[in-house]
Amino acid sequence: MKIAVNTRLLLKDKMDGIGLFTYESFKKMVVAHPEIEFIFIFDRTPDPTFIFAKNITAKVISPQARHPWLYMVWYQISLKRLLNKIKPDLFVATDGMIPLNCKTNTLAVIHDLNFEHHPEHLPKLLRNYYCKYFPKFAHQATRIATVSAFSKQDICKTYQIDESKIDVVYNGPNENFVPLTTNEQTKIKEQYTDGYDYFLFVGTLHPRKNLINLFKAFEQFKTTTKSPKKLLIVGRKMWWTPEIENTLNNLLVKNDIIFAGRISEQELYKITASAYALTYVPIFEGFGIPLVEAMSCGTPVISSNITSMPEVVGDAGILVNPFSVDEIANAMVRMNDEHCLRGKLSEKSLVQAQKFSWQKTADLLWESIQKTVEK
Image (cartoon, rainbow, N blue to C red; front, top):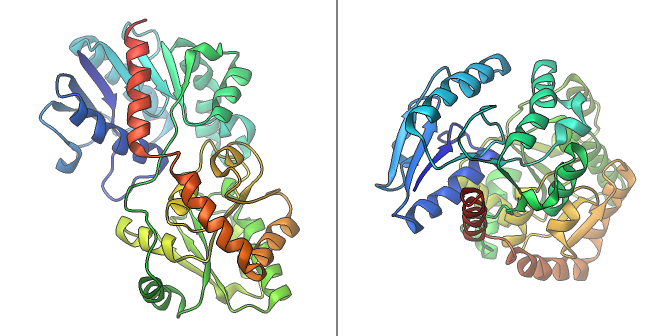
């Protein structure tokens, strides 16, 4: 069997959610199935480390698809031409985008529909492209995989897709996310926050991640408790807005918010395991990989009580209304003051995290692939 895969988001040291999903699941899948010929399709010369096994052939097609106008050329012309030439049994669209009116069986991995519910958070051209074409991708795909039961129901309802067409394939944490010793945690805190405990946010710095309310809640927490704790922000400023910048500059506790930028994976493991708690309160999430990464370290989490996050966190964290600064701040106060609660949540986090792994992701995705090929 010949399986073609969109791997254009496998970018060395630059992978976010979709890239991680692609990397972790197919790294395991290609090794588990040496009898399958995998064709990885890139839009630029790939790093050699992404060719995981001998049963992978890399194909590079142009142009580099980094803009909605170029998406049209890459997906609807270059990719369609390649698929017609190599004639795979299946094309796996890891970002949900497929060549329309293509004869190849397609499995579209649609991670979430945040652009349908919060279009204001995307640039106009990208928003228009997603809202116009994703309904078509969803209907024309042979089968769909998504990363949570919430996203499955959202796709069904928003695009009127029969639920029998959609498989849930959860994300997972890298196996290096494990608890650290107290001495190791102390070293990390000395390196990043001058030795102080810190709340942690990990993710792209984007309006959807609700940084404005997180900043305001942190200031309220500091005012209420007089705590010396810091807020450590890890991630790149992908869509950093003037409103976020103004909110930050007007905070009295601005100097207690530390921006680490994008960091290496090895550092991320340590920073996550050394955090006092993860404060991750987006207004929309298809899954939320930082949640399972933190829980795998035994790091307690504060997260949102909407979309997929209750499904991922279960009873292992404090869930809050992300639109309420007071609720976020009160959760931080509770985490600070109620030491028994924090200990219990840490224990529950380790248990909840066992429900997720990239090996389970690879296995579930393989099951979805088999269903698609058998259509």
